[in-house]
Length: 251
Image (tube, rainbow, N blue to C red; front, side, top):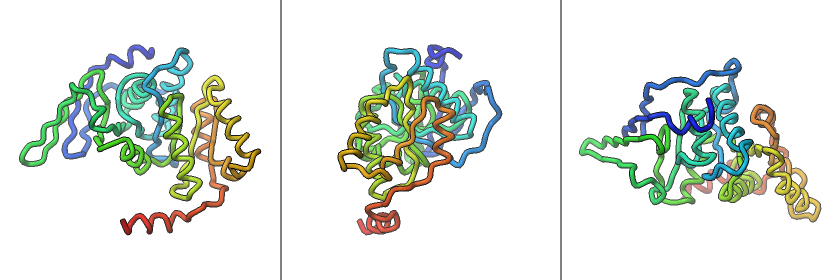
């Protein structure tokens, strides 16, 4: 299926009080046998721009298909344009569950939600809108927290806001808030300079060598997910995960 065709699949589904009701749709043909993964859901950070090269679009679609082949659901920032639209469509068309977490202020004007007396939320989703389940949140901070809570691992494709999201989950891992793998899909060496920057910080004593291990990178989706499956935390946590969770329960 070509990238352009992924934008033009008529989609109608309903969300009932946060419960996703699966629509009837065609399933993407799979090139490989379905593999079982240790991850149930992976959060993918990526841009609302498609980039200037076809390789970025291809990588987003290939990553979506790799998730499908491993029975992994997608958590992402919602929307249907750029790389975000390509990966969400690929996962959705492959038959896996898609959760788009988006601040209410960024939701398209065409998106309409009706709350009836019996608390039934019905959302009509048309072509060009977020596919799968839509989780509306108050702001960008809640968006990141919700995406992290719902995911077993993180992958970053190219994107501007992606950098902020990526660095935050890396910092959370260093602090001991989570021990989930953080992967970079290094398409055509896109993240080479970023990795050099991190290595420079290690050299200058601002990042410990063990904390550098938090970042997993690979040039292809298949190789990246495989490396993330094999990931084991090596860094010393500043605060233990148990202590952090106990502290959060007090607030």
